[in-house]
Image (cartoon, rainbow, N blue to C red):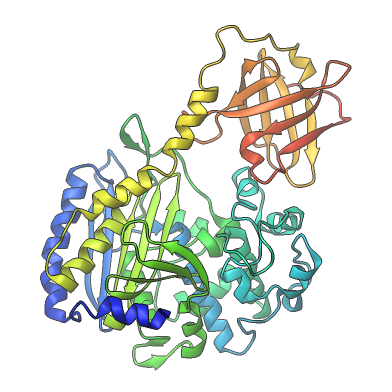
Length: 510
């Protein structure tokens, strides 16, 4: 059964949306959103709904920051996280429609400095490949460098050291910095920085005055939502998130009012206010299913990735959508039913939570069937609740409590030193006040205390939003009873977290 047949078969069981059905669904959707807030499901929610090129609904619920009284409304600016990706592909489509590049332009022809691990993919990888996550680049590549403070240029330059996860174009691997590389190259072809291109090609033409691809702009918004994560069963503002290095993939901030205009553009296939803003062929390419992703974990619908979009064939036919998440405290979603000219955006300021998907599924079921068959928020909360829980539990079980009789460590001077590899860069382990600390990143500004676990194994806790999760730091000792290398587990997902001691005098702290 082909994709078109799948879509037609799925949709044939349901009647089409109408404005009356959409309006009838709103009070029930609002009731569910209010119940989520009342039950402390998330601190705040903002929702935008578009139907047949009309903004039908804009409303906020809850608070911008837990414990404070500032309320969320349709103008509250949220960090979108990976919801930024379909916005990035919209910007790229605008540049493609101008004839500056095509989706199949090779990156080597735009930015010869960009390299992957192997020569052939480096020479052949296209804008389409990077936006569809099929370059072979492992999904996590570059993320760990961003976490310890490296900038975009450095991260993109170091991707060439990462071995591919699959052969070129054969596998799907969701990559923040792969998509970022494609977006930055497209903007470069237009003679612009990414941030300027996004503003000029999308935000300004749509009047999205509260939308930006710069973190500094988000911070200046008086009406913006704070990130929240769970600690001891309560939502708390534990950490901030500067996503500028991966701005095309995760760095947009916006509000429901602005995103309603962007949904109108998407559902209008590049037309906005009755005029063509982006060529329909260029933007239409973003919605084609290119890479199989398996089935939706709740609905069971077949899911694919296009260019910055998830394309799914489910209960009501074809969906275009994308979720966003920061573990530091953001969850967002856009979900569109193009055949119905219907779309919803749900923004929340918390993680983990399935509230965005739960509200979107509730809304679509109300519109398309007139009733709800289950609590979709609970279903999706179960999905998101399992994302990090098992990993944290496993880490705590393994490294949370040292052995009852641990082997003693060597003198701290045996471990203190400067370690290096060309991917992670320089890492300093230093003595301070009778303990060891580790200094990560380009300026050594990410500083963490090390706790002794057993002999040459220490742990540290790098995630403010997951303070209970210990990470192993293991030293290898040479014949002179000094460490010759160190392995940092959370930087070693790609096998690039092993650093060799270099001959610099042992560092100490005042």
